[in-house]
Figure 1 (cartoon, rainbow, N blue to C red):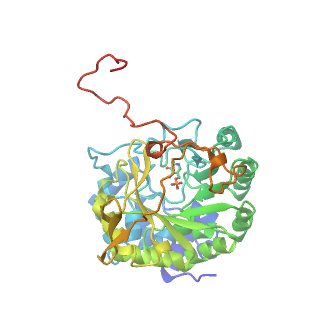
Figure 2: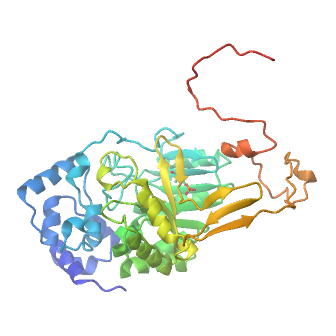
Figure 3: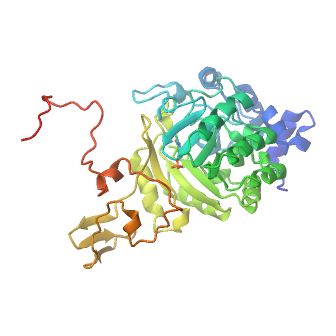
Length: 440
Ligand SMILES: *Cc1c(COP(=O)(O)O)cnc(C)c1O
């Protein structure tokens, strides 16, 4: 059992009217005592804001509400409050009300690719399933800020069934990503029921849970929860640590429990100006994560959501961070840097350039230290014209085990068996739109 820090004891006592100390590890107690106003935040941390500052924050929370777990609040250090990475993720900033021209309410167009309530079906073989509208903590950098605090509710079984039915009727879905809100705000029973329903669908091969609980409420990762989750393996869990300060003895314990249960763990960090936009901080973070058996999965460029302008960095900052990691540290500690394309294009990977130049038989490459090298390409490689006649192919693909598969997008332009030679954006303007003529 991780011992409580001095600050945690203090916060617990101030909240608890005597009971706080004993209840600290009870996640429901933590949820019941989330900090939802500025005055309580000041009282629990022993800080006093100016009347003007308090007034401005109160104005912000009318539009974008606040909720912080006592645990996460206790990680704030008051020495340099405004620069504290926990404070910045949890406590509002007047900047949230400053609208910028590029801000969008639903930057990822999740409300468009939505066949039934709760489901976003954007990629061919996987869906995002929003199973809860609630979070213990409202991250100030939430990409779904438009929905935060709307109506805090956990959908009932009837509503969840609509999503489950869609997945059941859509055989190409082999991967279901539960998100929200935080799926671990559901009770163990409801979650168990949901996972059982999804597991019963033959074409669903893997299920993933996206949750920030190990970061903001590690007490939620109870032995009971983990015992239930492990029955639904293969189940992947992705969490969101953004700063090494978030890694505590409690969060390590939560991660250890899940890793010991055989749940593969990943982490999705959001690149946030003033919080973690620094190669040294990210390096420390990824090292701490792999020590806890968590694989850094994505580093996200901050979305164009309304109210997040003060958190955004230039894309060059992300490239600089990846440059500082690739080659310099263990390959599995390096996340993939992505921009989630505004308008619903999905995640686009961004990398420094390693391919410097190219001829018909050589490529020129550079490594992480700046060494420039050549790779001589094979003389003897026979280009094979692939007409998708897999029956006759020498490659030992076991056809009975292989899925039907059709190239889409750019992949199609590279395929020999597809006649497509160009992709044209819908609505592209042409200077002259003539009648289509046949023949020369
Ligand atoms: C991120 C995301 C996924 C999962 O993408 P992966 O790259 O497979 O992790 C699926 N659907 C939507 C809508 C997403 O935004």
